[in-house]
Structures are given as structure tokens and as C-alpha cells.
Length: 52
Image (cartoon, rainbow, N blue to C red; front, top):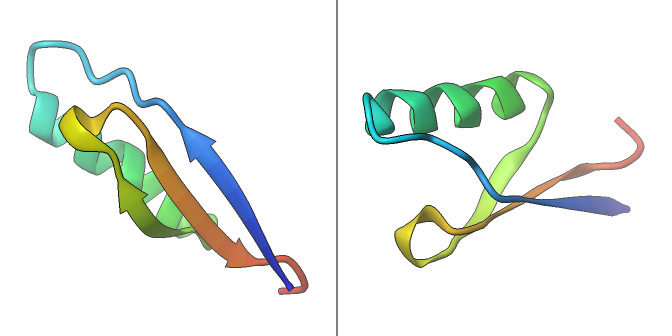
């Protein structure tokens, strides 16, 4: 079974790319996989196995 999470990253104006990368890497360490990134990084849909 899968579980999903929708986040709205707040990356700011300075170091936007690095901040966005840091956010994605943090979730990846928790087992989340990116399934969709909205236009302009407005939202990100993450997925992982619920029974891991």
C-alpha cells in the first residue's frame, strides 16, 4: 500500500535551487519519492510505501 504527501515548499528568493534540493533530499532520506512537481514549484506530490 502507498501513502502520499503534498507539500508546498517555501524556498525563498536566495539560493532557491539549493533550498529546493535540500527539501527534496530531506524527504528522500525519509523514504519519499517525488511523483509530481507543480508549475513554479507551487506543490510537490511525494509517495512512499506505507508498510516499509
